[in-house]
Image (tube, rainbow, N blue to C red; front, side, top):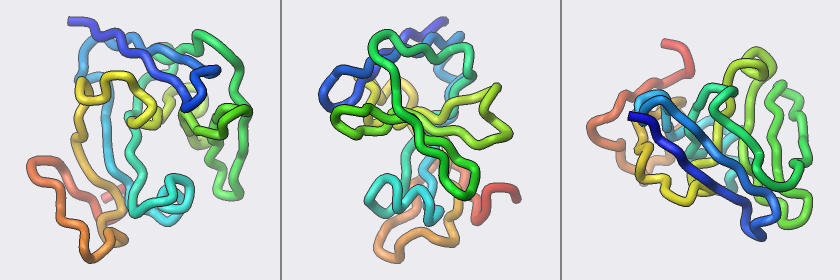
Length: 137
């Protein structure tokens, strides 16, 4: 069963949609790497990996910022909220959508955690999802 999701930035000038064949096509994960912690301004990043062809901007054009590590983040030029990110190798295949920008994020719940070796000591492990100390194990 297909899933249609919508999302937007804080000021709503940048809007997007996702059209997935099923909720399983999205892989929502928490990431405890230093880059995500810095970008999200908290102890982890929370994104949903979706196929590039399922992601579409409906309104507005994002600004981009490419980090030294090759990750590009797309964000609203007005309010600064970032909408998605992707690495150089994934640029033509996937988008990692900021879970909190979705209107109905609970439709694609987390499936796992990455960089668990960096998880903040006071944060508990999320139950019933996969846990990887690194990105590739």
